[in-house]
Every structure is written in C-alpha cells, then in structure tokens.
Image (cartoon, rainbow, N blue to C red):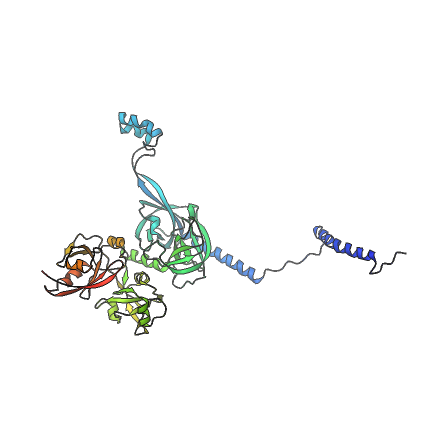
Length: 496
C-alpha cells in the first residue's frame, strides 16, 4: 500500500516545489516538439490596416509622379587639353618638344586644344507641361553652357533655358519637341502644416529617390537662399542633388520645388525648404507668356510699424506695415487706401513686416482684384485693390543729373539695387554730395534714395526731372529721403 501523504507532510512540500519548477520546462518542451496547442493568429487590427493603406498610397503617388521627374546635369565649357603642360607628368616631358617642333607635334600626343565640356553640377527637375516644360531651381542651371536631362527611362536629352529668376531661385527649361508625361501643379496656399508630402529627386546623383515626411511649416523666410523667400518647410529627406525636384501632396500634385536644406553636417537633418508651387507657377506663366519676369505692384510705399504706432492704431499683435506713400491716381489710391493706414493682410496672407509685404505683393496675380485688410482709426477695413505691373528697373543707365542743391542723382538700376540692399525700393540714387552744400548740411549722403519731390513719387530719373524742374528759383523744395537704415525728409531752397 503506497504511503499516504498529507498536505503538511514534508514530502508533499518537496513535490509542490518540484512541480512548480518542472512545469515551465515541460511546457517549453511541448512547444518545441510541436505538442503544444496551436494559438490562432490574430487578424490585423484597424491601425495596421490603416498603415498598409497609407503605404499603398505612397506607392501609388510615386508611380504617378516619378515618370515626370528628371535628373539634370550641367556642363561648362573649358579650354585646354586633357593633359596640361604644368601637370608635372607626361605633359611637362613634352614641353621642350612643343617649343622645338611646334604646336602640331604636341597635339598628336596631348590632343587638340579645342574647348571641352566639364560637368560641374547636378540636380533635379519636374516636367509640368506635356510639351516638355521643366521647372527646376535657378542655382541648378546657373552659368551652364550645356544642360543635359535624363528621363526615367534613361533617355538623355539636351534642354534649353526658357528663362530664370534668381530672386525666387526658379528656372524654366524646355525639352526637344515631343510629348512627355508631366506632373500636375497643385495649390500650395491650401496645403496645411502636418500634411503628408513626398520629395522626389536625384540625391547625390544616385538616381531617382522618394522620401516621405510632413509639412513642418509655411512662410519660412530669411533663410538666405533667395531674395523672395516664402518657403514650405518639410522633414521629408532632401539632400544635395534633390534641388529642383518636386514636393508633392497625397493627390500626386506638385506643391513645391525642393530648393535647400538647413544643415550643420552638409547632409539631411530634417529641415528642408521648397519654393511654393503658386510662386513657381507665377514665374512659369510670366516666362512662357512674355519671356521675362513680371512683378506685381499696388502703387504704394510702406514702412515698418513701431510698437507705439501699432498701439495708437489699435492693432493686435506686432504685425503690419504702415502706408508711407500712395501713388497719385494709382491702383491703391483709387481703391481708397490712404497714407497712415496699417496693412495687416493681403490676399488672405498675414503681413508681418516690410519684407513680407514686398514678398507677397511682388507675386500677386496681375489685373486681378485682391482683398487688402487695413486698420484705420482702430477699425479693420477690407478694400479690394486691382493688382498692377511693377515697371522693370533699367539694367544700366550712364545718365547722371547734377542739381543746384549740391547733389547728383542717377537711375537705380537692378544691379545697384541688389548691391545696396534696395531690392524692394523705388527712387533715384544720390551718387555725389558736394561738401558744405545745402544737401551736405542736411545730412544727405551718397547711396541715399530720393523717393519723392514735393510729395510726388520719383520712381525713376524721368519723374525726378519732371517734378524737380517744376520748382522755381528761390522756392523751397521738400525731398523724401530713404537710406539703407534711415528715412527722413528735408526742405531745401533752390538757389542760383
């Protein structure tokens, strides 16, 4: 008869301990040998299915847009031979023979001295018209003698330049006549922060690549890439070679042209910038229609609004610009805008400062009416202003006008405006001030601009001459002066 074990018997305690330690081992062995009871795998949950749908959406967008994305290689013509005579090698050995037998002898060994093409840049682009119109960055093709474009099927073509705009860093190219697959342009104004976007391009010359991220911010400026900056910021990976490629939304439409990255290492760090598609579209339309960049204008000058003025006008927040001058019979004047009004919003875009104002105004749709929100007498007011065309600056102007007030003026050309920081200003440039003259005593300096004479805007030399010559000898003349860091008015007497 087997012994009876009671619960409190020492043998029972030992058995319990043995079972407690042996049970996991037995179960593990059963699982290994396949004797364990199979567990039914769980069905994918809703979150996994949603991720799979997102993944398929990215695949669909990539297949839709990638055929319209091109690789761009730029070449510059250089002179000389494949081996230079100062290379310290074979060329240097042949130098005495070159002097003795003449150029023909060394050409047999060194090759002809005709110009050669040397690759110096690479980037990306996107075909946006079926006839082969490409949008890319100006810095991708700047100073190129030959531009070669590689399509998705590895076909290589030579592209011509329709035009470019360094101020927005946009360029337009044209491929040889044919039919091409193209990407549809989207509306960058409606895209929101947090939306998914895809960046497609040719990083490091490796070939077409697709990266995914979100819109991190909009309206980024002062990046230092271009004069007119209104960038979309994204964390989709953008690297050297991606410049000029498209940033696309979930509809597969181009909402930006990838342009630059913010980096301390030279590579991707999660901060990339793209020119908004609406800005690129404006440049594209102008170049295709007229062959030149058309800037828009409202017919007013503005200045920074200090805190005291903002409080006096009853403005909320530190935003807005003050109207300092309204062109007589101009578009803004006809719409009812007055000097002293505070502009806080144009075409549904917030105006933060003077740079924001000119950046937005210079790319408004010409001949269309846009809403301008102003604050007058502490009350908001919306006026509809028709957009006009800003007259282009002269490219060069040797004419200089010397006045009896002790200063000389000349046209403010495009190059001089860029060099002196007058990118958005109009006026005539003071080039010389006579010592101890009225102008000198009034504090006028070379490099200042005269923006008005007796309240009349002097946007060029002809208008300055017209208003200035209307002043009689012995009469007072009031001049509005704008310097690079100051603005003031002076009253002088026209003396013989």
